[in-house]
Every structure is written in C-alpha cells, then in structure tokens.
Length: 367
Image: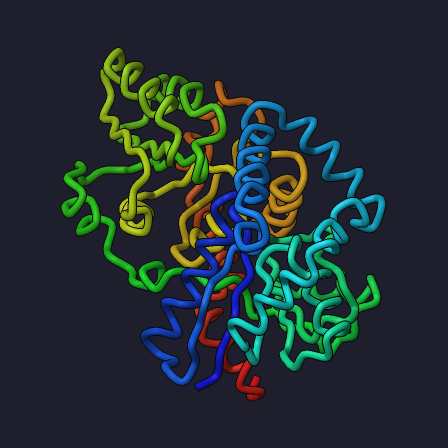
C-alpha cells in the first residue's frame, strides 16, 4: 500500500475540492493507494487556517482591488512575501510527515510547498513532492525548482514554467482532477426533469463557494432579456446573497430557481445551456468537461483574471464587463450558433476529464 499525503488550505473552495476528487478516485479505482488530506494551516495552528480563509473571503468579496494589488506585489517579489511564511514551523511539518509516512506528497496550495521542500532536505526524509496547480496560470509562490513534479492544466503553463527555469521533464500537463460526477453526463432534458425545472433554455449563474460577484445585478439584467429562458442562481455558502436573490426574484415574472450550497452542481451544469460564473480554476475545469458555453463575469484580480485571459485567448469563453449588459451578451451568443459550436469544440479540446487517472499513472512512474 502506497501512501499519498495531500496538503491543502481552506483558502477558497477549489483546493479542497481538488483534494477530495483525488481521494474519491483512489478509493474507487486505485485501492493500492491510501490517500490522506491535511489542511497544513489547520495542522500547524488552527487559528492560522481560520484567519487565512476568512481574510481571503473578505478581500475577494469586498476589496478585490486590494487583493489584486497584494497578489501582484507578491508576484513581483518572486513570491518571497509568502514562500517562507511557514519556515518557523518546519518541526511541525516534520511531525506531520513522521505521523503519515507518505511515499508521495501532493501540494494543491502554494503555502505548503517551500516548507515541505525544506523539511525533506533538513531531516533527510524520503518522499516525492508533486505540485498540482489549480488554475490556468500561476503565481510565483508555486515555483520551487527542488520539487519533483509539476502538474498543470495546459501546455501554455508548461511552456511558461520552462521559461521560469523548471526542467521540461518535471512538468506534466495532465490537468486538474474533478469529482467523478463531473464525468457523468446526463442529458439536459433528463437533468431538468430530475431537478424539477422546465424543459427550456436554461442559464446557470454561480458565484463560487462563497457566492461572490454581483448576482443580483446579473439577475436584473437577465430579467430584461426577451429570450425565453429560465434562470438558476447558486449562491454557495453566502446566506445573505441567497436571501437577497430570493427576495428579488419574487418581484420578477420570470422562471427563476435560487439555490444555496448544493451537492447537485454537476446536475445543474448538465441542465444548463449557458453558465455565467467567476473564473475559478475548478469551476472552469468542470465547465470544460461538461462543454457548457461560458460567460465570465467580473473576475477577481489575480488568479481569476489570469484564468479569464487564458479562456479568452483559447476562444473558450465570452467575457462580460458590465452586469447590466448580460441580456445583450446572452442574446448575441444565442443567435450565433457557429460560435457556440466553436466554444464547445475548444472546450472539448482543452478539457482533461482523465486528470485523476493520469495523476496516479504519474505516481506509478508510468506516464
């Protein structure tokens, strides 16, 4: 039995979701591996995890420009502002490694990388270190030449890593693992029936795990559309946004469904013809596999902005700059069937539905 230790951090929802997807795949298909997930900040000091997670949520939701400024400042300093933040806790990281005795450590958040590398070196520990990047571009904090393997979402990221001095043989563009349910495609009509929706053109709008973004303005813009559509809004864990949407939807004579946090996102994606979302790495990955035409709304400066640029450069998504124009943007897209087909074709080309399977082949030394 080979042991894999995944180091994550509860900063945003994507890192934990990716970790759970890897563990889910192993439990079902790779029982020769034992996968454990540890929030490194929670392990070192629980208060660190709470502060880091809440700070990210507050800044991303309420002060995105400040968050973007800090992101770029850290990027410009080669990530030095963040890379060594856990150096005082190397003995705690050593304790973690001795407790779990992994053959492979996978870092799905950059906060863990430098400390794990230094701990392995200082205490002469024997495990491989894989960095699995969870977006479609990367920040300097992800980089460490002493890492054994980098897993990225696209050839673009591979070429960029090579330009940053990472050897070609260390980089694999096998993608970001997703939950097994994402690969299970239900027809749109069956998905709508299962969810109790009408069988007509469906627009799904999401604001990420904590419901960021101006979903009420999007609802107002869509309500002005003369297209025969129904809307589904998923507010995530943001109860305040959910209540606002529920109250406002009652004023509109439209077919609207409001959801909070739900475990049926995959089914809602199957039911949808279009997805309006902030470009978080995991949401993008799932949409590509599902082949849903994407409309990107107001990315957070930093990794989401970089994700948006990637999607636009590849012709995978349409960008929305003003929420009140969503009805116009949607109408333009709905009337352009060739563009919709092109978007779906590009999504199929750049999706990585076998990312979890390929990850374990890499750990096997086969791929």
